[in-house]
Length: 92
Image 1 (tube, rainbow, N blue to C red):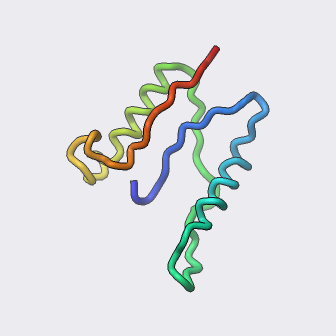
Image 2 (cartoon, rainbow, N blue to C red):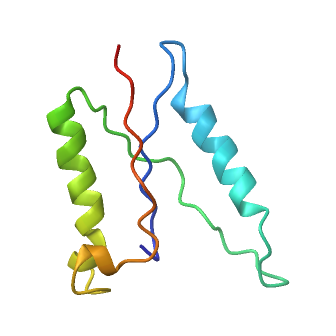
């Protein structure tokens, strides 16, 4: 999507999502931008949702996959060139 980003992230029990997202934002902001641009790249904070089951995971992935269709950017989700890929999380 041109105005937001969805990530599926997993970590150990002591993983802290907030600092991780902050670091990601800092690293991605270092990409080349227009000179003299002081406009913020990111909004403050972020929204997170804990996925607790395979069903929830599949439902959220489908929601993210259909986002470009709802945004009228493509006719079908398979046409969106920036969809990335899903990697199964080992829940053992």
